[in-house]
Length: 285
Ligand SMILES: CC/C=C\C/C=C\C/C=C\C=C\CC(=O)SCCNC(=O)CCNC(=O)[C@H](O)C(C)(C)COP(=O)(O)OP(=O)(O)OC[C@H]1O[C@@H](n2cnc3c(N)ncnc32)[C@H](O)[C@@H]1OP(=O)(O)O
Image: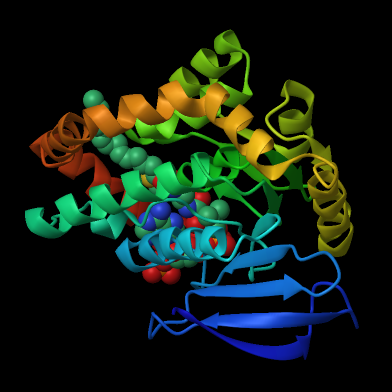
């Protein structure tokens, strides 16, 4: 059992009573889970300040949360973050830079497993994108079935901008949401879309002015399945996503080997080092 249950009012929905489930599995408390008493929907909030970078521990917590909620027969999940300005800053590049190869392998295997768990989840999912969502953040959002985003943030796959080739597991869910031509162009350009542009191309489904409004829109989406048989719903989703999931399951080892080979190249290490430096110095200029 990973979670302890306590009752509390939630910052998300004012005075509505919710069950707050806190992860006990991780000493870092990098995920918070709240279950709405009324709807039975769970809100999973990434909580790794300052910008919810996906390191090995956060990735594992996300996978475990999904498995736990599936076992508990959750009726719907809303993925968001505790930050006011960032949904997730994507992969923690420190995991990729000058890596211990054993940990790098563990890291990428964990990322593959997280993607399989969220993209293939039996439970309906919605992303409440309450901040910037580049790269790995966009992957998580596109694994969900519906996306509601707050204004004036950015979302997209920007890997090409800093010299990385997005691996299949990064591309697939993006391709599942967008027309192929738009997806191809955006990936080749390493483009980050503003919330408005993301709405216009269909990368997100709705805009919301506030987190509370976004939450209500996600709830409304999840409620569209209220009268649908959950097994039929889940099997239908599997029919759409099954090939993508099978391809990764079958190609997992090759994908891992390609990833490690690519990331550990001298040229890629140099680019990663420069990018980290650039991020660190961004605000000093
Ligand atoms: C054949 C092919 C086979 C294999 C292919 C192999 C490899 C491809 C592999 C990888 C795929 C990767 C997907 C990814 O997710 S890569 C990560 C991409 N993420 C980004 O580019 C986001 C960068 N960050 C930002 O733009 C901003 O930080 C922000 C908009 C998310 C938030 O801005 P803020 O102003 O709120 O916060 P900052 O001050 O900028 O950041 C705080 C702190 O965090 C550091 N940081 C930010 N992002 C990262 C990161 N992704 N990794 C590591 N560190 C990061 C930043 O430097 C600050 O730290 P310091 O205060 O400077 O110490």
